[in-house]
Length: 109
Image (cartoon, rainbow, N blue to C red):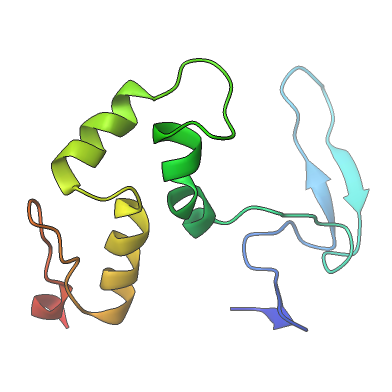
């Protein structure tokens, strides 16, 4: 993982390059500083850790809440942060601890 001062640049565009944009007959050149030109205020874990508030209890969301698809997963796994638990267990080589659909990643270590 390429990191500088806590910033992870994996998955970022290179500092210079060319982009092919559909509908244009030529490439578009670009250049930027990956350490200062990227702003990412979200994380994958954040989506799962905030799911209770944003997709089930709807404390910060607009219409359409609770989200039907989220409720199906919540009812199955029994926790709102099932995605975070799944990924963390995989990285740690442990179990998710779900009463339904429990995964034991220690079996694959």
